[in-house]
Length: 218
Image 1 (cartoon, rainbow, N blue to C red):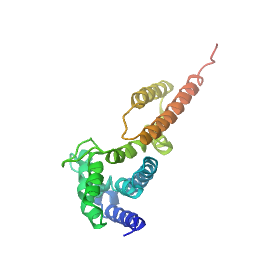
Image 2: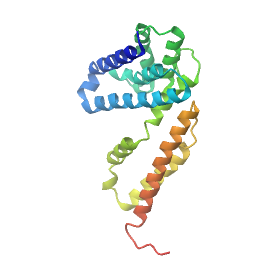
Image 3: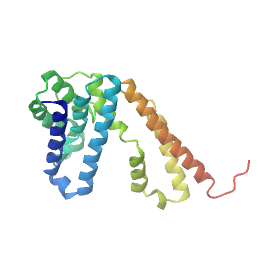
Image 4: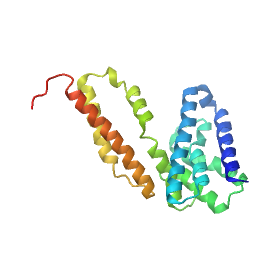
C-alpha cells in the first residue's frame, strides 16, 4: 500500500467514524468543528514531520486520528479519556494499513497521551509521539480560534471595564504559556510564533480600549 493510499484510507475511516457518531450527528456544528480541527492538526503535524525528518504520512495519520473517539458518546470522564479511547480505536485500523508494530505503538502512544499526558499501556515519549499533542495544542492558537473565543465570550457585549479585564487576563495567561515545553524544536518555534501573534493582538486591543473612552495626554 502506498503512503497516499494509507492517507486516503485514514481520511475515509475518520469520516466514517464521525458519520456514525450519535452526538456528532445530533450536533452538526460540533461535527464540523471536529472534522476541521482534525485536518488542521494533521497539517500542523505534517509540517513538524517535514522539518524534523519524521515520516510525514505516519504523523499526519496520527494527527488525523487523535480525536477519533469523538465518534462515541462520552460518559462522565469522556473528555479526559478520549486520547486513550482514540488510541484503542485507531490501533486495529493502523494494523490494517500494514504498518510495522513498533510504528503502530509510537502512533498510538502519541494519540493516547495527547490529552493528559498519560496512556493506559507502556510506551516511550519519543519526539514523534509528543508531536501529536504539540500539534493539537498549537491549533488552539490561530486566527479562527481567537475569533471563536471572542464570540463565545460575548466580548462586544461586555462593558469597557470588563473588556479591559478580559484582555488583561488573556495577556497574563499567554505569558504563562509562552515557554511551554514542546517535543521538538520545530513545534517550539511554531508555538512561539502563534503565542506571539496572540500577544500582539491582545496588546493592540488593550491599547485601543485604553483610548476609547478618554483623551490620552502625554
